[in-house]
Length: 257
Image (cartoon, rainbow, N blue to C red; front, side, top):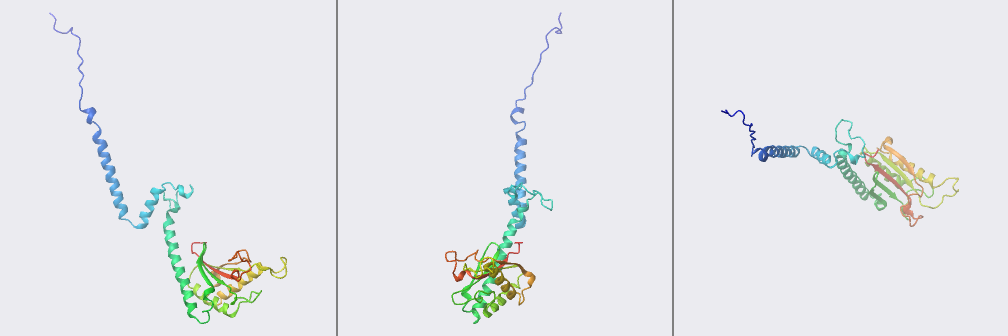
């Protein structure tokens, strides 16, 4: 009699009907939840920081590896991964504040000159504007009032007093100063080989420099003296116009080395 030992073995396969459907889905959902919470905490942390930190974080997400820096110096001198131009917003704010300060000084100069009977007739010949290098104070000749004796670098008495007054105001600032001389296009007697408008404009700029430093303005505050002759005409349409004869005083921005 057979005891069943000769029957072929049976293989039973167990199928887990739930593992394929729910096995890893909860892990994905949990990871998404943790990521969202982390992002929330980062946002809350950034909002609690200073404006400078917020600007740096914003700049990082706009330019994470410093492409706007031309690919140079991805690490700055402090070893930070932030590119050097993260300082740009602060530099812009500094420039804006400095422009406001220089404008206030320019308005003060014009205000004081307009109240002084000595200069009330020539205040209209002083032009103040911002240029690339800084604040430019320009003293322009008129058909009636001249600041230099004809064909010379000798300042009139009125022009000397005017420059002395301007120099006293500039001495209150730490900014470097550039003095420029300009002439009209009338050729100077003697021809190109002799004394020309280049020499005349440079000599007039130096006369103006000496008048500025005759008061409180330190000589070391003068950064450059330039003579442009007739190469920077204020009125190119009329190269012989008196408005082309002028002295320009540029108060340089402090970050303009």
